[in-house]
Image (cartoon, rainbow, N blue to C red; front, side, top):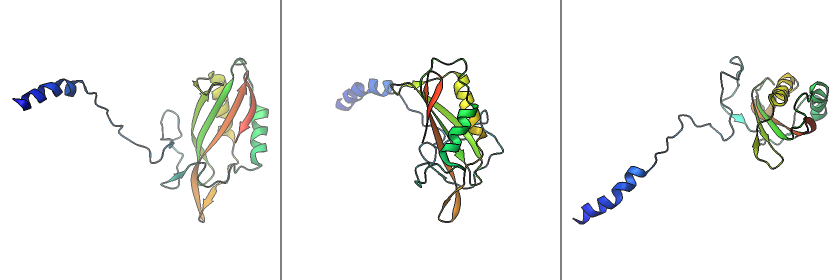
Length: 167
């Protein structure tokens, strides 16, 4: 009798529980960018089974001509166009393989209060296109081996204009 009463008390709880469905695939590391056939080049190959995050080795930006060369390309090519009222921050992350080739570009925008924001496609599309044109990434080396790594560029945007590029 007592066990029946306990079962009746907990029976509604069992039927009202929500089940979480586990994702079919977990990334190897937090922040990994999985291949997406709609966005990424199927010919792009990583060289190693592990891709280093940008902070793993502490070398900073390793680009021919350093950060000044990157800033110069964006100053020359970026046009604010129709989206002159938009302000905030856009981060573009991408993967650089051991040969210095790039792919898997992803962008995320934030407003001035760090809330997620979708910028006009003329801004994000243009920034990604210019970032894809950068061909001077130096392969990074760890313990004598060339490695694959994630890199990012952060753009501070005010009224459609780039006012700063980080890192």
